Length: 299
Length: 183
Image 1 (cartoon, rainbow over the protein chains, first blue to last red):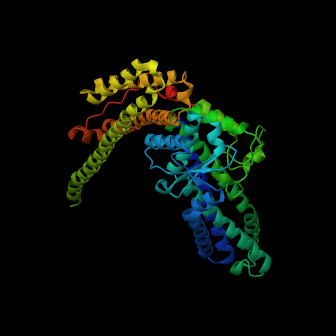
Image 2 (cartoon, chains in turn yellow, brown):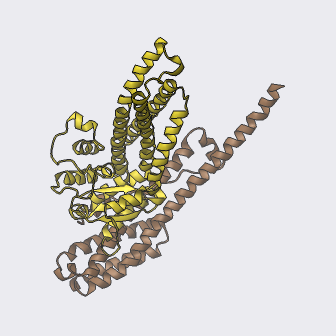
Image 3 (tube, chains in turn green, purple):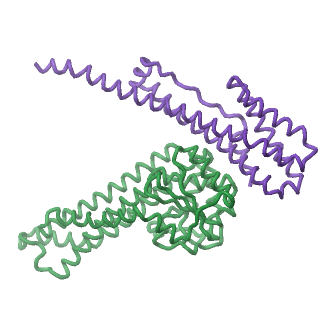
């Protein structure tokens, strides 16, 4: 259990470093191509950070509103509130706000910019199909996201990916509109030609690479929350049983869409019970549910 | 002249390290104490709920008088306990009797339909698992604190300022699984 936690932490840190290297590298090439120096990269960082910080501050309210979540009440959802409270006692994080989503498919998510402003939402379907231990497993997974500040990690990665996408976009536009100016003073030297080719290739490939790394970070954080949650309840089979029930559920999510897919406990769009190809794996925000169950059972 | 500075710097650095380590030890010892009182909060909550439960069940399950008396008596013993061992023994009795009480409640359909009883059952089940979680949190804090008092070089500061390693709370044979049978 402890080894899985450490391994997932190290891997997600390496992935964040990889996207950072990509952003800095593209910024450098951009500067060379247009003789901007670092100006272009800094401008892209400011724009991307501005957008990400807005979503970091206000994203939770938006997501809760979009999924039509309403606050859980002591009268109606005593078990849920008690389970959340119990796990906050076990982990030492402050009590988050708890919401219930009117939705038959069993699923859950956590949001909020830090443990002091966190919210956890579960669907009505989840409350219906899970028993107490399984619910504890799910809530512990969500609380681990809160404790590990995964919203912050996601925001950081989104910012870096934003820098890469913006720079690549500007580079392609520059090639398209002002091909004559590209290369600047170096024009005519052999290095200019090579730079042009590298710049063009980078502007096409870098955004794809950055998005793939972002998805890999997301999957890594899911494994980490599984392992951390298991440590919180000291009972990995609880979450494993919950994931099995969720995978077997015939209900499809109605309120989830691509914009919120990464937040949920399990990817909402996936057809249950099907094998997952490596290609689908590459473009998923979540690891395949069977793999998650296997890791939990190995703990 | 530089060796003079080295001679001055060494004790200063050592002193600074000592202060930082001392403060870290105090912080962790306070966390251990605080998490211990977290267990008490949940135990008190259980004491408060038991009379309500007995009151709710009494009207229905008249044949189970002996069980009520035992729960109430164990509760009184736990509150009045002078030593940690006495209290632990009484708490174990409470847990066992409550579990029996909920088991016999299955035989009384009227009771199982009673909203008040169901709410109390949920509260007591939740409190039971909160007690377990509070103990787990206490043990986590003890582990962190003990690690500092046993690791080098922080162990030197711990020894000098007599920070003594704390004892873990040993769980009874029933732990998480037994609480969990409630659907």
